[in-house]
Image (cartoon, rainbow, N blue to C red):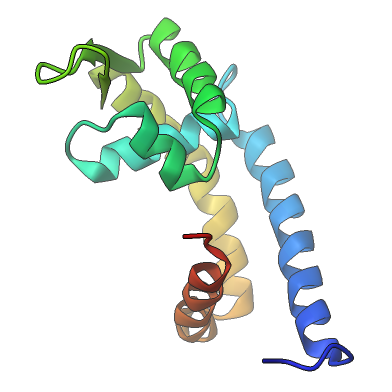
Length: 146
């Protein structure tokens, strides 16, 4: 356990928070009109998942409430970016899948934000970022509440 007076944890998390804010601002401005960062994040997750997810699974993956996820999913469904259907095994539950329009919207968003994030990684140095990634993942795991 780190000492309370150790400046390293504060410095690291301060940098992470500033980077997070800057990324949110730059990426949000670059996203296609009407798409919010939360929409892109869910579409990107579903595109990589390869199969359907429940709203509860998505809420857990994004560390948000089920209500917040339901709101995001409603907006995505309204835009035609996701399909929401009843779970055939338990009609009280729902299953979410990305639609072809959602995949196109996600791809358009990636085309818009790709240069921003690629440039940031290039400026920091790809090899340094590659070495940093496992450390950041371990820090994230250490913050997850069971």
